[in-house]
Amino acid sequence: MAALRIGVLALQGAFREHRRMLDGLGAETRLVRWPAELDGLDGLVIPGGESTAIAKLLAIHGMYGPLRDAFAAGMAVFGTCAGAILMARDIEGARPDQEPLALMDVRIRRNAYGRQIDSFETAVPFDGVAGGPVKAVFIRAPRFADLGPGVRVLAVGDGGEPLAVREGRALAVAFHPELADDARVHAYFLESVAGA
Ligand code: GLN
Image (cartoon, rainbow, N blue to C red):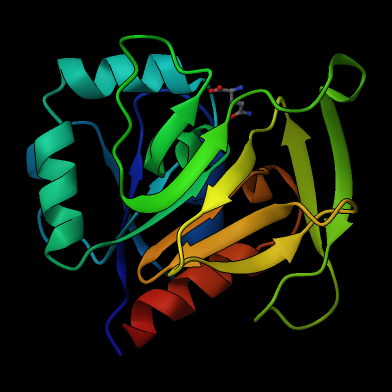
């Protein structure tokens, strides 16, 4: 099978780490900053970072329409942390100029964890990922607050809160799998792209 062509949105945030993981899994990767760079992609990763900054740059780069169109035309999208925030239809705690991409029927709350646990690492059982819980790094993580009927929960936290959700070819996780030494969530994404 030909290698999957996966773009990594490289406007701000942890895009290098994502690319390294995807390269390690045999994907043909490309950094994406401008609309033409979406051409021919099987999937796109939207990294964690700062969702307000990424939103601003998406607008400046004229990416909102082309990214939504590419998704509608069959490109899969995987968002982590800030990326998950941008994929939601509704962002609680958004800046007024922070437009969601609205690729998934979910509402998400920014910075939902209190100060003391701003940042932590844990292990999370993940539906569809074999070999035990996946390593997950949380940094000022968001929380999925409301899920539409077509959204499947793949991982939950200690309090039962969803940590990973999927709706068709949209996959979003509240944590940073790219910052842990564990590529299985990326492998899951590639499998889902290959199976689509
Ligand atoms: N709190 C950040 C935001 O709202 C997301 C944090 C992250 O991606 N690690 O964009």
